[in-house]
Image (cartoon, rainbow, N blue to C red):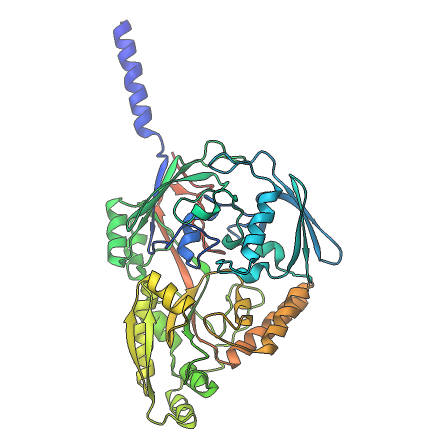
Length: 490
C-alpha cells in the first residue's frame, strides 16, 4: 500500500509538471539588430530586444503611451519648467553586480551629449544645461529652456542608463539594470535573455526568452504554425492574417504603431532639392494603392509625419491628391519634361520591398525611372542613414512623437527650414495642451507643404501569438517587445 501511495504521488507530480505553464517564450522578429546598445544605434530592432527588458531609463513609456516611473521612482519640476529633480530607486544593480546610483545618470547623459557621441537621438539631450549629483539617490537636471516633452523623451531607448565600466561593451554584451539579463547572441539567428534574479523591482514571470530572427514573411507563418515561435508581435505577412484568425491556437491583434512609413527623400541632392520635383512625386503617389497592394489593406494613409491616433493629428492627405497629370506638369516646369532617372534603396522589411515596387511603378507613370537597389539593414544604416548616399528610400520611423527630426538639417533627409526649427523651439517651450496641439498642427502643415518626403501610411501593428500567452503589447507607442509583464496562462 505504501509503495502504491508513493507511486501515485510521483505520478501526480509528473502530471502536474506536464500541465504547468511554460516559462520560456520564443518571440519572432523580422529584423536582427546590428548591435544591442540602444544608446549607439538607430535600428528599431535594438530597442525591440532590449527596451525595458535589459535596459531601463529614468522614465519608461507604457503600453498606452503614458510616461511612467522607472529608475526614477519620482520627480519634481520647478515652476519655470527648467529644473527637474529625480529621486532614484535604491538598491538597483547592473547585471554585472555594479551598484546603480546618480553618478550613472550623469555619466549616461553626458556621454550621449558629448561631441563624439554616437547616440542616434542626440537631439533628445540638447536642451540639457547641466546635470548635478545631489546624493547617490538624487540627480538634478537643469534645462536651457522649458521642454514640454522632456519626461517623455527620457523614456526613449536612446536615454537608458548605462554603467561607465561596461558601457563600451554593450553593443555585443549588454549590461543594464532590467528584469532580464543577456545570455547569448547567435548571429544571424537569435538573442536569448534570462530572468535577472537580483532585479530591484517586480520580477519577470518568464524565466527566459529567445528573440528569433525570421526575415521572410512565408517563413514567419511556417514558424508560427509549427510552434517554433510562440509570438510574432510585429507579424510581417498581412495576407495570411485571415488564416491565423480562423485558427483557435492563436490570438491575432490589430493594433497601431508610431511608424510613419515614408518615401524618404534626399532634399540636398538634385533634382530633389527642387520643391516642384518633390511635389510632383507627392502627386504621383497613390497611397491607398500602396496600402492595398503591399500591406493588404493594413495601414492608414498619412499626409505628414504624424500618427493619426495622436489628438494633435491633422489630416493633410488631400494636400497632394493622386494626380499623374499634375505631377508631369510640375516635372516639366522644373526642367524635366521627359522625367529623370534615380535610385530607390530598399531595406529588408516587407513594407519597404513590396511598397517599393509599387512606388517605382507609380513614379514610372510620370516619367521618373527608378532603379531599385535592395540593401541589407546594416548597409541601409551605413549608406543611407549615416552616409546620406541615396536618392530615395522607404522606411518606417517607429520612434514616438518624432516630428522634431525635421528640425535637424544634418539628419539624413537634409531638410533645412528655419521656420520649422522655430516651431519646434516654440513647441518645447509650450506647456498648455491646446497651444502644443496648435503648434504641432502648424508643424505638420509646413513639412507637408514642403513635400519633404513622400508621406505614405501609418504602419499597422499585427500581433500574432499563442492564445495562452498574456501580457504582450497590443499597440506600439514605442519600439519595444516589452516582456516584463508577459506570462503563459495555465
